[in-house]
Image: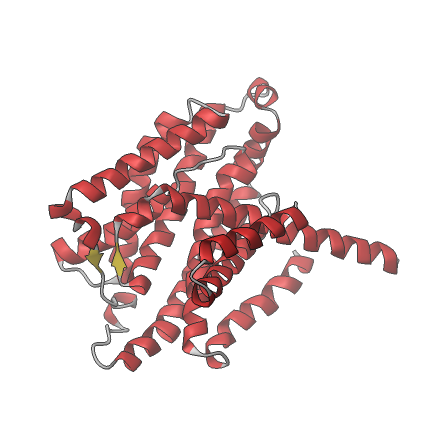
Length: 325
């Protein structure tokens, strides 16, 4: 644990101090990155630890976002804690049902089935406009935090900017730390080791007594809940949720977060989500041909870093260590 603490403590301290040394816009960009990192952590429990590639994780992100939006519109709730509870319950319900269907299959059949189910939700969000607002979406104002101890700010734009770049940033950061700690415990537990055994050799895992389908379903459920939590945190920051967040292209971005960072390492998806978010934000602001530019940059990065950012950094660190010995 000591070497891990040597990395984690300075990074955590830096994340705590950053809002006081960088502009509010940069803090909000970082908030988006941390939220996407939570989604990528959840996704990687399936891809990196269970060996299942899902192209439908936008569904659970969107369910978390819409759960908060429904609580605002239909129950007039403004508490972030209730948003999170609603997002967790809704994403757990949807991922439990979808997981029950999907884990009966593997490889491309699993990926396509997950994609198809997510598109059903996207279609419902688009067509049931009297419930979901259709393409106009649903607005979610800034919530109250910690049971109303930190109230919603209604006032000039600068006040809202300050709320999002400080108080809401620290709220997201706290949830991020909790999610990282929970996921670390999960992947290093006997359950996490069983998932890795399934990933490496399903037949042998079953032979030694691992209930493969049941473990995959639980992994799917946990993965969906993490992604749902990310969606719930995202929607007050974005201020609006639309069916676009349920569309398959966002599932592709979650896959890319993980591959870019390195899905064979615990920290890879976190790094990938933060880097991808910054890359996309700056490329979109720099050129109208942002999809082409971003695509070329990402292809080059993937070709240059086949094990992802974290995997490459780890290999370099080991090489330097051997050279110094």
